[in-house]
Image (cartoon, rainbow, N blue to C red; front, side, top):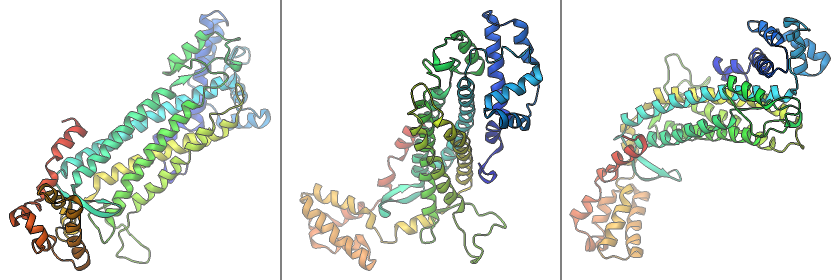
Length: 434
C-alpha cells in the first residue's frame, strides 16, 4: 500500500519483520507442545526460544528464498542459523507450510480487526457528538435529489451513526470468524502431529482451532471478512456522498473544514473543493475491489492449492490499510465539518411552502375529498410554485376547491415546521439508547 494512504500501526502488522516474528512464535509454541507430549526433547524446544529476541534478517531470508524458491523453508533455514542446526532439527515437526502461513495470516487479520474496531468506535463518537449538536437543526430531506419533506441535520448524523454501529457489530463478528488457527499437517489429518499441538499454539496466539482445516483454513471465513470490509467501505462512501452534495455551491449546507493556507485549485483561487470526501469515495472503491477475489478464493482444488496465496498477499495489507486510513479520515471530516443552518432554511424555502404538500393532501382526504381529487388540487398549486416561485400557502388559499374543504386556519396550521420534528427525540432514543 502506498504511504499516502497508510497509517503506521496498521502498516506494521503487514511488514515482513512482523510476519516472520509470528512465524517464529508459531514454530516455538509448537515445539513446546511437542516437548510436553514427549515427541521431541525438551532441550530442543527450549533451544528454539534462544531466538526470542532476534531481529530476523529479512534480506537474508530473501537471499535464501532466491535459492529454495520456498518462503517457509527459507525462514526455517535462517532460524537454524540462529538456533543451531542440531538444536533446530525438530522445528516444524509434522507440520506443513500452510500451518504457518494460514495461522499467521489470521493472526494478522485479527490484529488488523482490533485497529479497525477502534477506528469505528472513534467514528461513532464523532457522529454521536455532531448528531446531538444538530438534533434540532432543520434541513430539507431529499429523495431522488429533489426536495421532499423537512428533517434535521441531527437525524442525518444519527442515520450514519446507526449504520456505522451495525458495521461495528459486523466487524466484531468478522474478527471472531477469522480468529482460527490450524496446525494439522498435510491434508489436515493430524497424521504426523497431535491435535494438542494445534490447541496449544492457538491458545498462545489468541485463536481457536479450526474444526476441520484440510491443509488450509477454509476460505469462506476470509470471504466473509473481506466482504465485511467492503460493506464498511460502502458506508464510508454513503457518508462521503452526502457531504459532497452538501458542499456544492448551490447547496452549501455543510462543508469540509478548509484550513489556513489550504488551496482548492491551481487555476481558480476561489475554489473550496470537497477533496477529502472525494478521496474517501475512491478509497471505498479500492477496499471493495478486494471482495470479489476473496470470494473466488473459496473454491480451491481438493485439500489445497495456492491460487489464493498471491491474492491474499495483496488484499490482506491493501484492504485493511486502506480502510484504516479511510475510517480515520472520515472521523476527522465529521469532527471538523462546517454546518450552515441558515443556508439549510434558505434552501428549504427556495420554493416557499412547497415541502408541506403531503400535509395538505392528507388534510383534504380527512375533510372528505377523494384522494384522487385531493392530489389534483394540491399538485396543480404545487406546479405553480415550481414554475413561478410563488407562495404555496397563498396559492392554496386562492384555490376555491381547497378552501371549500379547508378553512384558512386549517391551511395555515399545515405549514407548522415543528410538525416534522416532533418525533426526533423518539428516533434518537432508538439510535442512541438514551
